[in-house]
Length: 315
Image (cartoon, rainbow, N blue to C red; front, side):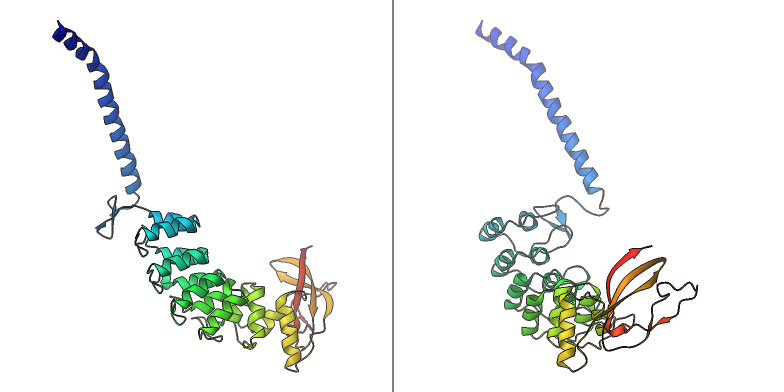
């Protein structure tokens, strides 16, 4: 009798068990479909395999995710658990490069202490030091230099760390790089110096610091503008304009006394600007003067070395 009861109990449970098996099968099929969809974006990859080697992660490692989240405590914990500090993610980005790019000095230091390779270059030959310098992450720059980051390394555009610093480096960034024997007059493939790059990038703090440090004001941009002309185009209240005025005064080249008048600057559509300029003077062509009704632009006797565009408004 007991056997009969057990038989009928098992018989009643069979449909539910069969449904569970079907659900598991459907779930597996769905997961496989998702996985196929993801990996199909990469024509020659297999899930979990990178550069022909099996790995734990397909995209970011746990370490890389912690770095991107700027979670210094998690980074330290993972490194203490002997996670590889040099394991690149699926894009080929090394942890130290990403940390330097984001600029958290503690994370950069933890990685260096754990054995991260300080001069491993990423895409286009950009090193962690270059990435940190470009972002003006002076604390990260300091730690990288303490671990012997190479200030002479160049990327594919011929830029060293100090040339990258032109884009966004502050005074402290330049201080650390120059203390490590970076060349203040270094040039990239376009022949542009850190000062020229800083001025073109509107990096007011960095440009002012380089001017104070004696960077060459005669250095020329790839389009023929001197550093002094570029610096003179900064508003009178900027750090760059103040540094330039002080420098010119120290060198006996004028006190940069400002005079203001309105001119029209041709730029596709007519626009006007208040232009402030000072000494030294040199005629330069800017287009039609305010109030001039002639169609042909002409030379306006505006001192180019002292030009400062204060604001522009459309007419």
